[in-house]
Length: 141
Image (cartoon, rainbow, N blue to C red):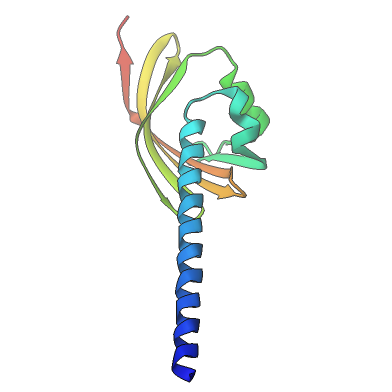
């Protein structure tokens, strides 16, 4: 009887940890989907993807921005587009490597970027932004 009882406990533990692992994988996948949505650069998505206490940080300039600064950036009338290379995720973090294309001093430029996004409750709470502006490509008009 004790053997059956022990086996029952082991089965319950396996099912419990398997369920937790599956739930964590779903959260990671949802975080990756939200990170992709971020790179659509649509101001209408801000409330759905950025937490109320969101903060973005640029490593070079030490510039920080919040949700409203981000909304202003997306609606300032200057062309911008992101193209994602790949994303990886672990726990509450999603790393995204992408090209940003946009206008700068009248030219269309393209440069490589990395974002490290930290999630809280299914929304982006923090972004660490790194850009390689040494490799700017300028499109000739």
